[in-house]
Length: 196
Image 1: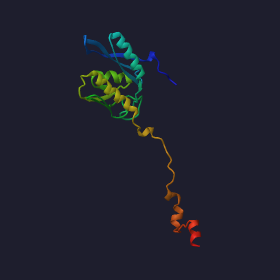
Image 2 (image 1 turned 120 degrees about the vertical axis):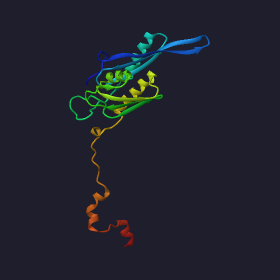
Image 3 (image 1 turned 135 degrees about the vertical axis):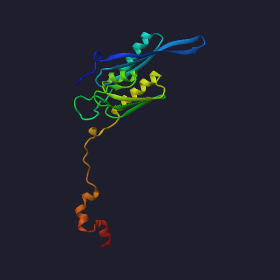
Image 4 (image 1 turned 90 degrees about the horizontal axis):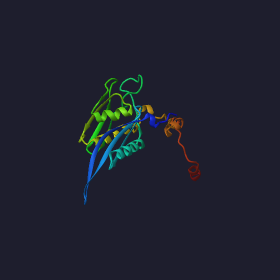
């Protein structure tokens, strides 16, 4: 069974944003970092960390991203020719006011969307995809989380190719069809003894 090692994973710092907290001694500034991670072959992760120093925050965000790795299901837009290249169905995710929707696209379309969307989808190994988003996508953290939620939803649906074949037992009418056709009536033995 193939394993996922650190050597196969690539990471990228998507956003570094200073955040402040008001204390009685003034404002305390820390740095919030968002890191995307993936192997370009069906796995991606998103991590966030807040720390006093940028380097510490980046290290923590990378660890958080590795811990949040998810499998991403890939599929086809039309005929099943070659390797899977797009999302298998329309999926959507939301975080805060941001809603992100991913739609399957034909081969060769590439990723149609914002640079943030492109980065996360490329890490997941998706080559072609249409995307649409609404809400305050300027809030990069929520935008990333919405796309990540949409990608994690790809394994949330059971498509017909994943349905298990189940043989149903015969219904009571099928089981006793020959008796019903004969037109006879059935009397329970205890009832027959009562009337005798």
